[in-house]
Length: 322
Length: 80
Image (cartoon, rainbow over all chains, first blue to last red; front, side):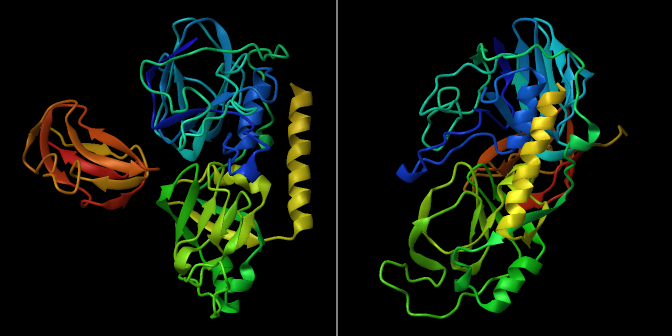
């Protein structure tokens, strides 16, 4: 068991996500950076769908109730055990009574803490992920709070020796400016040609409104093609007749401040989606902070699928190495 | 003269000097503060983080205005 001494800003239980319910309006939730989450589980020998803790911006203080192995991956919030610095991206050993804490964030936005066996919370609709907006999943449907006691599950598949690590080249580096690959569409036809170019050429700044639901970006105003709005569409030129929103899709209400919809977002609605972040770069999106700079880079579907295959191959190679 | 101490922002977000728009500032320049006193809030991801004093002192000055967007490690308050 793990005792929460301090909760951090927002620490939630997450896994691969609540997949398969999108058509009834249920977003997947799950780890924002699936790459780091997956490696965290691999480093402690857990089943790939074991639940971990997602820690955002400000780390919690956690006391372990028994000897166990843990791993920390993702953005760099310098971790400490009993006040002593410990490495990330490595299998660590903790003893009963040890306290894990963190310094201020140095890079990235989210850390994944995997514990041998995984976090034990009820499975709701095939997932242990927390969906805080409606209060389901994870630990009582909410972020952890001081005083909570979190139990571990029995989802360990493999004994990974303490000190195991992955190659430095497999550890992502997060700076304060990011290139995020997108596929232009589904409703990009609604933008003027000039605004399509502006969207891709602007260096956007991430606003304080950036969370698991979506990231809002400040930069240039975008213009939509003038038209008589069709039946069912709202009156603003950024409105279309309702459609399903792909995860990672980008909408620009009224042409100001593009919003990238993420894992806890609404699944459909009536804003034109002008581009969609490719699945591989959703991981990087989850490590972007307020005030960071973002450029959207257009790629083809083939390039997006190739990037996904490369990420999967990298994870398979890491799994085989541990 | 004791040396000056600064409070840095642990988070990126919006800095507020008051608990809500219709309430007075937590503290003013020149006020005595004790360890644990709240001097402001940082809002990010619809969460509000309380910025607290870690050592007793006097507020020398605020380095940022109310409702400024701040970054991690940015100086918020100087104490003397």
